[in-house]
Amino acid sequence: YTQAKSLVFSQYGEPEKVLKLHTHSISPSLPPSSVLLRTLAAPINPADVNTIQGTYGVKPTFSPLIGTSEPSVIPGNEGVFEVVNPGSSSSTLSKGDWVIPAKTGFGTWRTHAVAPSPSSLIKLDRAGLTPLQAATVSVNPSSAYRMLRDYAADPPLREGDWFIQNGANSGVGRSAIQLARLWGYRSINVIRARSTAAATEALRAELAALGATRVVTEDELQSRAFRADLAAWTRDAGAPRLGLNCVGGASARALAKALAPGGTLVTYGGMSRQPVALPTGLLIFKDLRLRGFWLSRWADAQPDDKARTVAEILDLVRAGKLTDVPVVEVPWEWDTEEGVLREAVQGTLEGFRQGKGVFVF
Ligand code: NDP
Image 1 (cartoon, rainbow, N blue to C red):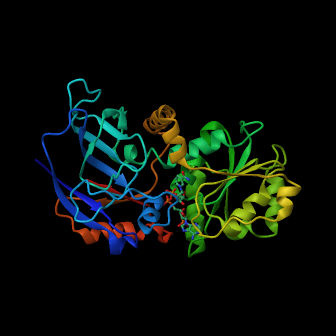
Image 2 (image 1 turned 45 degrees about the vertical axis):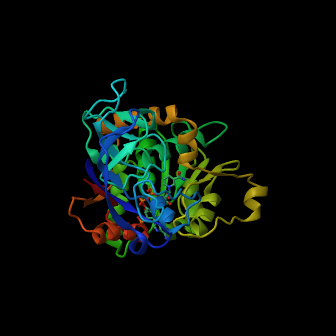
Image 3 (image 1 turned 45 degrees about the horizontal axis):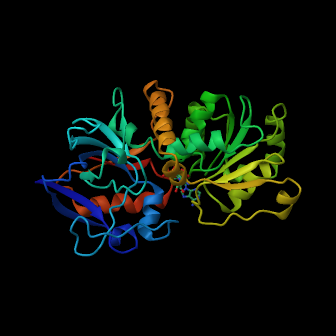
């Protein structure tokens, strides 16, 4: 028997209240198609916290599968695992391979997992990768990649074109900055000012080093002077035709105002919890297009495209062209206490953080 531990919740609520650490054993007599996995690293993403709070757009399925006293959910959508037992001899996997879940909702916050079949997993070429890199590739960089490539219409973004994004310091935002640099797009990046001017300048410099063309604070974006700055910066190539909205509220409104006529505002996050409300004129006179992006919809509908996108991104990581997002490692040893794991999850939505929390096993 393999001894395993999982974080679980059986009712919605704040993570510090509802998350529990559940110990169970995995039988050695598994169905032949299934694959036994050991977790190497699993990030804590904002969507995971929303799922636990019960505020996320899709609801998970509560199940008694791992023997909890009440039906429960194992949170976590992203992570990298090592194959411990590939299952039947015809398995496409071998012991020691690194895999990520093919679909969302896998439940990655656990020491071990049993995947129903090799086809529920994507095998990675692990050469030259750290577990942290492999664990954080499928959500943030993939989202940035798809939004930059698929959402600016008539025509798609070309070299020299501008786009604008808020939440530029997020995992998605940092990926977008770096991909844009590789593809020759120019970016206007909106950040929240830090508590001191020096800290704000340091963040500005950090994003510029990643490839950000311009970095502005929310206050600068929403100031009167911004219109003139934008016009000056984009005089040759034209105003941004794509806006990536991570935040909502006043910030989203300011992004929309910065877009060229016929431009597209893609909303993928709602960190401010404020609705996207726009002046009517932006729709009538500028004919802006409002779209939503949801990675799961794309990835679950096109698993082969997901595997291709992930492989391409990992090549960029190996080549040093895409650097890691700042992370705060949360070591998860056998004896790590429930409270330590719970607190790491609870802090996720607080903002102004040193980096994304990642469980490391
Ligand atoms: P990170 O944990 O890396 O970063 C969170 C970001 O949110 C930080 O940059 C933080 O800014 C910002 N933030 C936090 N609170 C606020 C606030 N009140 N107002 C404005 N900004 C705030 O996040 P991810 O990159 O993983 O995710 C970012 C967003 O994108 C989330 O909403 C997530 O759910 C969403 N997302 C959506 C996907 C989809 O498919 N639709 C896929 C991936 C992510 P600061 O640096 O100033 O603290």
